[in-house]
Image (cartoon, rainbow, N blue to C red):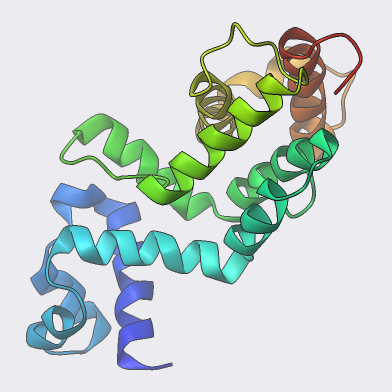
Amino acid sequence: MSGKERILEVAGELFAEKGFTGASMNEIAERAGVAKSLIYHYFDSKKALWEAMVKNYHNKSGLLEKFYETISNDDPDVMMELVTGRNGLFEFFRNNPRLVRLFSWLNLQRDFDPEYPDADMRERVLARITELQEKGQIRPDITPGLVPVVFLSLTMNWFASRWLYAGWFGNSVPPEDVDDAFMGGVMDILVKGISCGDKI
């Protein structure tokens, strides 16, 4: 593992444990076993380190590649696969509980705009949703930004607080199937609510 990779790994651990404010650059350097100056060689600020760490999670998951492939596809079902599929957004947060914890900390602390996703990705998503509205595949009266916000907020909140909600499924769903039962139900409710007829 290179020094940069070690810094990113340790930063993820400490940000998850203590939040963005609580984790200091000194502590990150000490735990990573590197000089603090090396961190600043790679990242000019703590925020830059946080953003690089999030991007590192995405790169390892392949989600960004899938995203760029998805937005160029004309099949609206492929867009839904980005949210629900085994390589999609839901799986990404299920497989990265540390990242969910990081966003939970940021939600409490509100120290900075995490710029998640980055501006370029946001614009691409909004343009794609607008295009689907123009094609009559998504209701035109919905504000485009609401679609990703609803999916992101539901997904992140589920994995941050599933221990509070899982009991609502009672004995009808085995514990190992609760995540999929939640997402399946959410997609059924949301997709039928945002689509025009049976086009999605």
